[in-house]
Image (tube, rainbow, N blue to C red; front, side, top):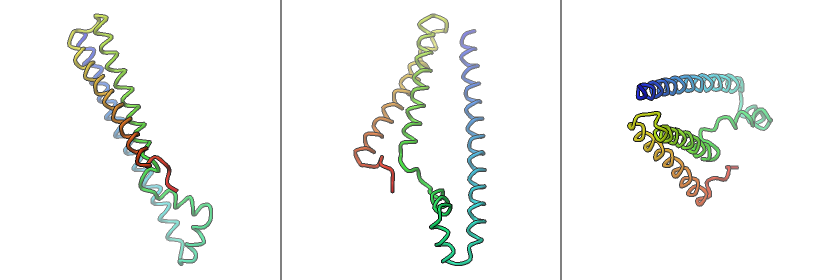
Length: 144
């Protein structure tokens, strides 16, 4: 009976994650299309190089150019995402191990619990090593 509960939670979590990923990707794609369309319309209305140069020197022109970046300013975003996922997975593994220790779940719950703890700790170590390497190479400073 208790393994059914763990399986139900795992299935619900997987379906929720897939749904969230799909909707997030669709939203980002739509926002990128809208932004690209606006930028295309703005740039199509500029008829000469001097008009473009004078537009780029205004505050709105600078904002337009700042939104046309393809890379993150610093690699800290992916590192922080790694830390967040690591913390969540560590708590999941710890909860499975605690449930097993309390006797509420079959002995089969210890294996995924230990694997989740190891995976979460791996995320944390990877984030720390990435941060240390980026910092030692001077890549964590924002580009000017």
